[in-house]
Length: 226
Image (cartoon, rainbow, N blue to C red; front, side, top):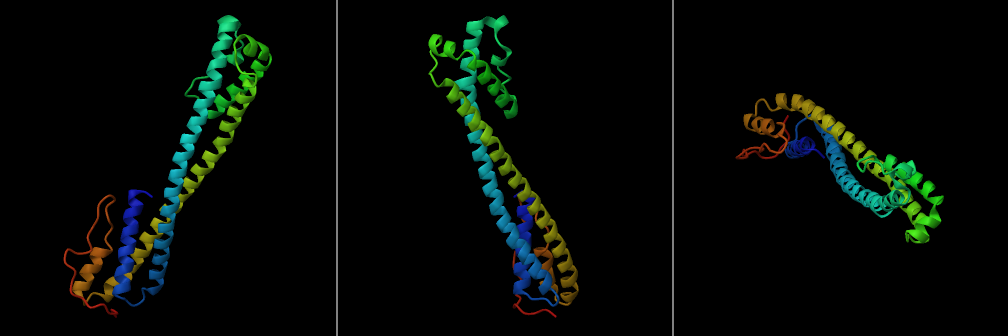
């Protein structure tokens, strides 16, 4: 949830609390809508927080898998190939892509290296001392990263959806408060203290800051304002 959305949620809660305490005619329908907005924004905030944590977790997991593929498999095989075949004769499939390349490029290059290494498997094992199952380990590392990519994409999709939903709810809530303001003000015109309290409560809250309801609450007995 953004600062703007959090500020709006605080505003909506204050408006709802005020009109629940000081009931005003013709506000019950919109007040119920506002209550639903508050509920859904609260739930959406929890979803957004969970999505953010999942994104961070998936990002860290994907980085670890990428580093393992690069450091434990791609770099050793590329260097061995350079040592064995020399730079001019080294198969292009043994060449490393740029480390900052995207995951699809890294995975594609890794598949090419596996295919090239299969033709020289005995050399890598017998002469260079790689384990007998080095190709199996290499493929396993590729698969692990390949399977992690869509998981992170899905988490990011959920996060984006959550953000869009929260922003739409914020706009819906602002519209509801605007309508409530048009209903409430005329009905509190002859009650200046309560009107002043309402004007303070319904005022937008600056993101990262806050607008107090009133420094000193007026002495108003909760009752229905006609």
